[in-house]
Image 1 (cartoon, helix red, strand yellow):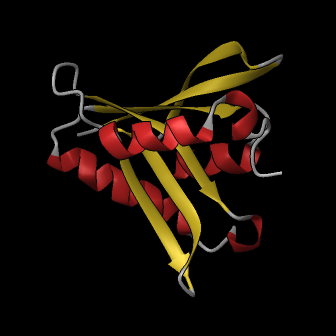
Image 2: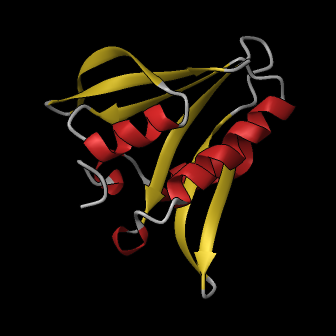
Length: 130
């Protein structure tokens, strides 16, 4: 499965999509006019200059093509334009592929959040922007 816990089990998807549309930043990748991956987060904190990635998802059959790194790059470039100093995200502690991809893209594990995904732990990962 794409997520350790289905997103629809954690939140109402309609409410979440409305929140992303009105307050967030969303980038997607399409193949044959179908969305195969997306990143969604918030990079509009002009007080603390922090951004937060809520979702980065690539359909399983499209993973391994560099799409996640491309979406991260798009989000990061948008953050740079907005003078964001730091990007934060949470990922499942056992999601080795995601952790390695985030590290490859400049993120570091900052701490462990116990029981973040129900009974499962998560890593808080941070990228400091130059």
